Amino acid sequence: MRILVYGFEPFGEYEKNISQDIIGNLQTETDTEQIIFPVALERQQFLRAMSDVQPDIVLGLGQVDRGDTIRVERRAINMMKKNTAIRPQKILRSGPEHYHATLPIEKRKGLIQSYNAGLYVCNFSLYILLDFFRGSKTRVGFLHVPREIELAKATAVISDILTETRKIWG
Image (cartoon, rainbow, N blue to C red; front, side, top):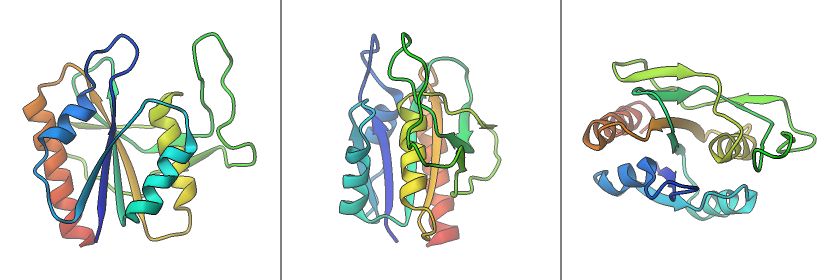
């Protein structure tokens, strides 16, 4: 089994991105690849990585500005917004309205379910990957991590999810 965990570089006014910090703190396992992507609505960066790694499990991490609980994103919508000055547009012109995440992540303390991954790169990456792996056995999930959460706490939750995933799917 191959697992790919990805996060993002800092963006906008942020000097750090909690997703990058978490990936840097995770214990490296031989079955796991880690990638930090630029914050860009560029489909090919995600698809190239999937082709290179050929994962069985994909877990994306992104930074959310507010809150104190990690959000399990259960759905990606076919909409994106490149900046606040323009109207949202479709990610894939002929794509479905939404996809549901295919990696089941059990409810536990420190997690809440969410059905709104936003309109920027987190939702974009989740939608693109769910479309790419549509009909395959590869499972895809995404977590939004509050930027002010304690790094050790967030890393422990993500590590537990990866351990659980290995037990279930490995």
